[in-house]
Length: 495
Image (cartoon, rainbow, N blue to C red; front, side, top):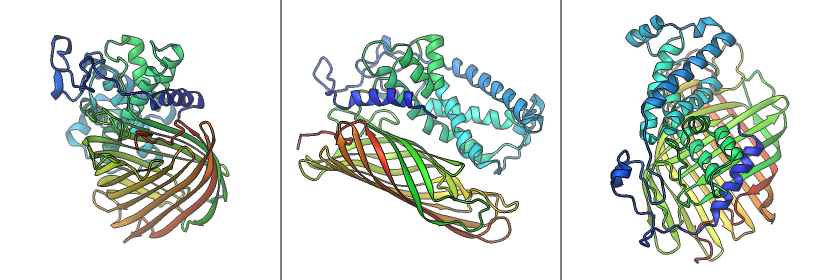
């Protein structure tokens, strides 16, 4: 996870972008796509998914570099796993790999939840990052992450290749890797002028493939990606909470009442910025990473969503938004159970000025994904999770009151079905509500209260998974370091 120093670098970079004016070309137009020329031979004009824009250096692509780096990374990881975990699962050979390619069989495995649902997605983000830092675009990186995941599942392990790991590494990996790539470039871009040692180091910490390829090749394949004056908002929270209600039947663990938590969240490409165009995947995205500790147990959460295809729209002078197809990855550990999904959703993100000083920002999504859910510490030998196709929805609303206060509420709903699972027939309904109220005290510092409620209703037939109703409710107080004294409002003062 990011340490505080790197977060502070990113905080300064994002804050420096918050109030910049729109950048115009020499012709007076805003962000016109560069037409094909000899200098953009590898990235041809307005139909290119890379969208080289005025002021951006043309990208040079190299398909060979990630094709070498990914196998070297896998060989290193396999060697480490052999030393730490032994030959039983990682003593793979060319013969075992070829047997997996020819015969499979592909299964839904039941390895440790955190490895499957967080370790594999991060591993996939590394595959993706090697491609992205070699000049390739999002979709090309998606291909590399899926191919890399396939080779790991067949040649990297002796166990049967896993369908769920292929989804987690190949498809969730880019949904994590692109925000990390964008945030690393914000660190490089911030401050003006060529980045120094500390900014290069900070970018490498956030996105190791970006740092490595910049070290090896300079800016030949990994020039600084221009943010194009994207509207960003970042916040860092730290606080304490009390679990006011806990229902945890069937768990062998004991949940304490008191907890401490920290949270890092960023929104990039918020709608409303004059002249900003949504040309590339993840020109709008949100990323959140949080941790919670109670008693001697640690719990991690990661959520990211980004616009894959879409466009901006306006409804009058006071409402601006973006709509289209979003990709998302969610990983939650609300103390008594955990769940994770990789999904595609249709929806919209908007900003609506209700008055001159009051704005409403929001996102509404509905889609379907593939994920897992289960008790964190199950009893006896019960497997602690199951997989299935997962229809889901999200509604997030944030009221901004001038430079003084912010009310934030996000509701998520998931329905984990038995479709695509090898376990007992059944389904799970999962709901999560997060809300907070913060008041800015001075500068970028705010304090407030928060409330979180997460519930799981699991119903199964047959042996293997018990039917359960689990719930955790937490109230707390927190300090909030803001990236923008306007709480992320875009187009301030135009109304």
